[in-house]
Image (cartoon, rainbow, N blue to C red; front, side, top):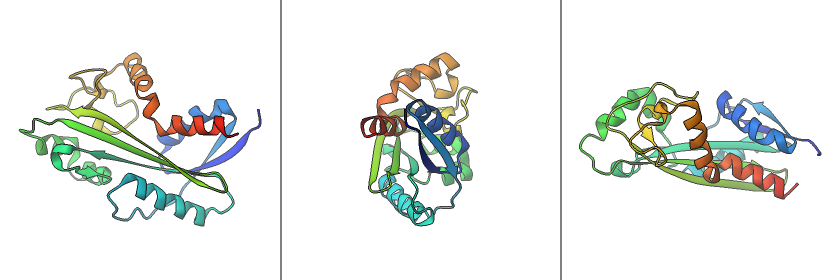
Length: 195
């Protein structure tokens, strides 16, 4: 197996470690690059990811690159907070989201993911949406190393429960359930098919 070096421009160590584990078995040596992106004010995750990839290519020429972006869209709130989920959580936390949803019957919540990959010649953008639900109160204690949104977000595989309530075995079941909508896995398949 021929090893290839790809650079992931992210400051999120958890994302980097997760993608490293997914790509290592196919011979990819993932390296982390720190970069302070100008994310602009666009409302679509795909457009933000395209912009980040353009910036990364300018900052790190002649490298194969990966960037990503994520958002959290609540239909009952007209898509709020969207790509600004980090700002919202830093401002009034997951508890504030629950207050905003008080009295709302539509509890759907959509994690939207986009990953940009530059193979040295072409840009490729992978996108996916994971539809889950918001609970009426925070529950659970196990964030599995991820965001505090897991206190209030659930997935259909575990009705009525937040992801923070899942034990490690259930967390692995959740990861298997969302495997086909994970841009990290989509990238791996692309690399397997085109290497």
